[in-house]
Image 1 (cartoon, rainbow, N blue to C red):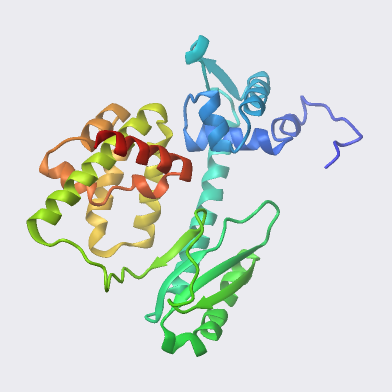
Image 2 (image 1 turned 180 degrees about the vertical axis):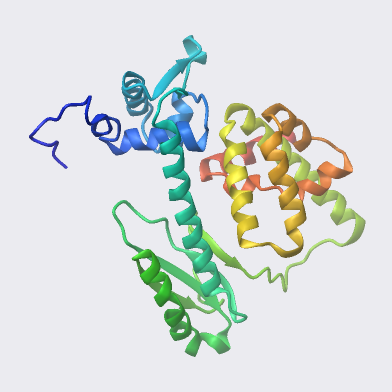
Length: 307
């Protein structure tokens, strides 16, 4: 989009400058919502989907506009939100509304595809820029393939209308279904483990607990370099509790309380503790679900290094 030909008084219309590019909006979201505090240029760039050079330039612009402030010096320098800026509370509310709308959409889609005959379902890829359409893949039992597509299509009409979207639907049997792409948004997993050979009894429990501990140690290392993981995990637990998780609500509620009250240091200590409480909570850890593909790769490398 070309810049406006007519310039306006920035004293009267400061938001023209503050919100003039998507890069600035993305970084404001990182500062006031995703992290809610100081963040390095490198981490801000990753979270906003920008180049490091572009993120630094945009953060300096936000500093000039009074939205961001530098924290620290040298290589440890970070940018954080300028807490006395009058717009910060409004920005935070806007991004919370944005997140709630997205969560409401995902919840509505999960409710649509949740039929007894549905085995798995996912959104093929995240919505693109300026896109008002999405594509859902559904894996159903073979006996239901002849009718489940029309049933789901009729159930999707109200969701399309509510969110002003075009929703494309693909139905597969388990025999011909593709694998979900790495960036798929999972809507439903059946949990069907028929035919999967697993070790039983005490040995399996011990191996599972040890693997959970290695995973927790790797996540603790990630939190050390990126404290925003805790905030993202809190947002995820809020969404889970909003949807309702049945008997799992108790542990998820405990995670939410911990994420709201524990410092990142105490959180990391809990993650790697060998106490019975920590072992129980690791079984319902919200962290793995909120990792990006890059963060999962780093976690796997960290886990392998412990072997």
